[in-house]
Every structure is written in structure tokens, then in C-alpha cells.
Length: 236
Ligand SMILES: O=C1O[C@H](COP(=O)(O)O)[C@@H](O)[C@H](O)[C@H]1O
Image 1: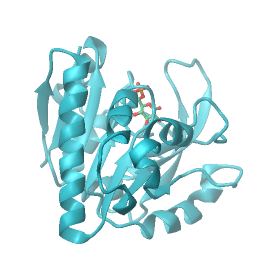
Image 2: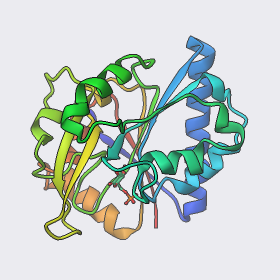
Image 3: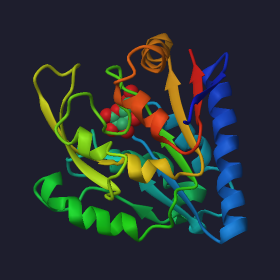
Image 4: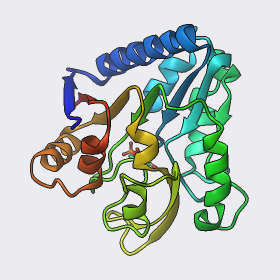
């Protein structure tokens, strides 16, 4: 069973430097070994400085396939679009030559889009060489929200889908449902390396609790279900 390995830093800048270095080295090694690398990235606010650091890094970007870990079912013009974040913060400068796989399609909802999104993701160089996960205050990672419709299918260890539709109610947005698409445990499980980037004492406490006692929370179920240990990068 995979476990969490903590890497703590005094400052966010130190953490970003270390994680950028680890990510760049792994992606470069994958290109050297197999001619191509694949990196699945989360959205949200936490990875922004990491994206800025890597966008400027002289990596073999045209051979590094970037894809999303999860997406809100909103157009790219929406401020919450993870795809928009990747375009604005990562796929620029040196990294602008990287091929990118989005999750959002023109379908009206992620449930009808799932076959198409799965077809797109099946064509990627898999397993992922690197996956960058984040964490929400409710213990969600990717778009695997506690009690969401679609959660059990997405976390089914025997599932075959790589991407799954999710209908979630976010605890910090009272009563508001969001439609999302997420990588499944099946897609995450075989990744060669998985990093989880978190900042602040609250997220550290949520993660610690999930790993120790609230083991039903999605982030804990993902950590347990992976083939590889999850490298946790944390700074205050
Ligand atoms: O909803 C989401 O939230 C998590 C955490 O986001 P953050 O803003 O607290 O860093 C993120 O990992 C995920 O990709 C996103 O869709």
C-alpha cells in the first residue's frame, strides 16, 4: 500500500524551487528514456508559482505532454477554468511548445462528455510520468469530492475509465452544485510519480487528519490506492 512522504519547507519559495527541480528532472529523464513524457496537473491557486517557475525552465517541452488532473465544467473564458490557468500560467515562454490535453469539451455536461474525454485521455502517453495533485479544505483532491455523485465510480479500484464525471457540492460554497471531470483512481494509480502540493497550516492539518483518522476522505483513499508513494510538498 502506498504511503505519504512529507517534504516540509520553511518558505513557499523554497518549496517551489524544490518541486520545480524534482518535476523538471523527472520529465527530462522520461524524455531521455522514452522520447516522450507526460505530466498531469491540477488547477486551483496553489500551483501558480510552480507553473511560473517551470514555464521558464529549459525543458524539452515539445516532447512533454501536459494534461489536466481535473476540470470544472465551465468554458475556458470562466475565471474558475483550470484549462485557462494552465494556458495563462504554464504554457507560455519556454513551455509554450508543450502539447496540452484539456478536459472540457463542447458537451453540455461532463456525464455526456465522458466517452469523448476518455477517448482523448486514452491516446496520451500513459502511465503519467508525473502527476501534480492539490488538496481542498474538505479533503478533496483532483475533483474527487466527499459524497459527490460519481465519487465511488471514480475511486473504484477495478474501474476502467481514466476520466469520470462528478457532481459535487462544495462545503465552502453552501448548497451550490458544481459539475466537474476528474482523473479516476485507475488513471492515477499507475503514475510513475505523484506529488501533492499544499500550503498553510489548515491544509497540513486536513491532510494529516485524513491520513491518520478521516481515512474515508478522498485524498486518503487516493494515497492508499496508488502504486507509488505520494510525495507531499508543504510550506507554511
Ligand atoms: O477545485 C479544485 O481545488 C483543488 C485545490 O485548489 P486550491 O486553489 O486550494 O489550490 C485543486 O487541486 C483542483 O485542481 C481544483 O479543481
